[in-house]
Image 1 (cartoon, rainbow, N blue to C red):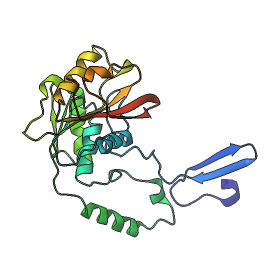
Image 2: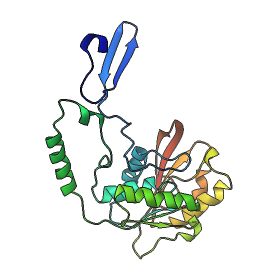
Image 3: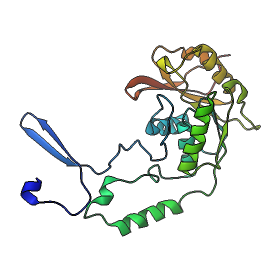
Image 4: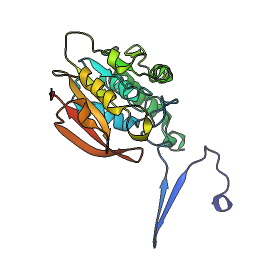
Length: 246
């Protein structure tokens, strides 16, 4: 292409070419990095949940953005940070750039106006979102990711085991988490799940990610709804409950 039209004077652009028999599709990359990448999670623990799936879990859980919110297995902080950002009406892509911003036809002034309008809609404060993990490094990563996301004041990180992370306050709330499963963890999954279930005893509500073959009955909850999906190529189910089996 350079031999035909010469060197361009703008930023490099990425083209994708797909060939299916006699059909050729040429696409110009508008996003750059995958859209699930928000820009603030520059550090992560092993096998993190994708940001988009974490946001879907928060919304699907039915959380109203006001009641207490607890993630006792925070990992990199993805679920808790997505919850805090949603509660404050923060745009998910605010901390990243997009490939189309470098297009010659892109209107940078209009783009800045759009972001200004989005930023004006952000709530100045949100509810306290509790996040904890038994791994010291995970908690530190969560703190740094939360700061990059702009929710450091709204996300409280507690370096404690799930058994010690008791929800605070008289008002019932939500426990929403991506607990360890499969090859991601050693130790007794049943004990971990039972501890999380105790945190979310009725009238608290519970929403989790569960992998195939994991002992999700150990949460001690009656799952009222579930959605099959994938996290990083691994088949999982989103599960939620509002009542306890105990």
